[in-house]
Image 1: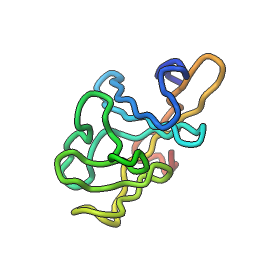
Image 2: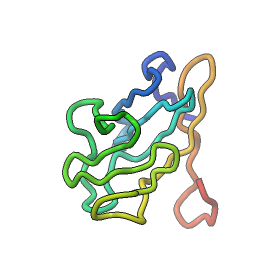
Image 3: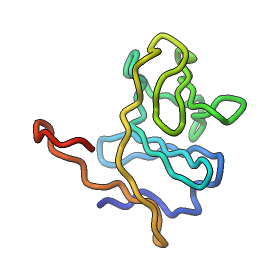
Image 4: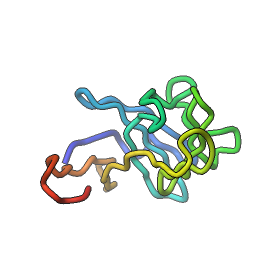
Length: 115
């Protein structure tokens, strides 16, 4: 496991951009649950945020790509509108405990295991 941030750093209905080594991530808290994704639009591979830590649309109910306006469901990463409809953000396994939010170990490429 790799520590991401304290749980208090991600408030309800908020998003947060994170950098771990060479990986850009985005975290969103919805109904108390933390969702973690690679910060990369499946359409063009660009970062998603409008400004630092700004990943959500105006309603706060969807993740929005600042470049193309694509909209993604927070709880699954599925693109529901825009040029990448039917694709999805790459979800990353995470968990939260009293110490904070953790990125869980990811399977090695080609291992046949799913994250």
